[in-house]
Length: 216
Image (cartoon, rainbow, N blue to C red; front, side, top):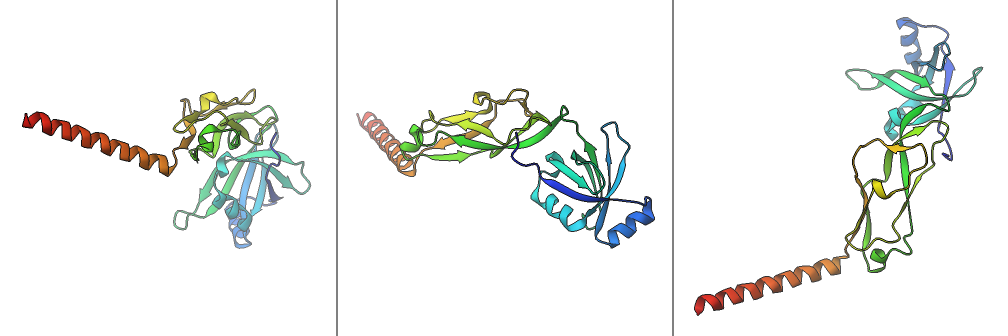
């Protein structure tokens, strides 16, 4: 399960309509609505600065939030739409959908690499190159993993780990329908240089042999 679901603090919006929305924005609030979950829609206002910070953090449309509204029961929501000012590109309205614990949703889950102390490639001086520090998964709202463990304990220099080799939690699956790379063990610079020198020697020998054959 996720260690902590981020919270969004909002307040009930008592008035609706364009006039009320403009008034809310003048007060540093962004109007929004929460719908779904077999419950009537709820009009809300969210502090502008708080919402803007969340948007700048990224992944806003694929992050599960706990919405806290005074006088209302806390609910899990996911944003379904952010309307923005066409000139300033700043948020002017947000739509959230309530999620039950059994609802399925796409979320980005952090990758946690394990087995580094045993990895033969790292022992030889290689380095871990992370291609995907997080993976977008289709998960159940009530069973969201805090992270995905990726074992690199058997990787040698030049080897990769892909999504097909990862044991995902039951009921979850990758959104991308192909065997994509998560990380690789890159060769140390000393090995790369040695390999380049060897190649140069081989090319030189080949050139020398070719010259001798031509002379004969």
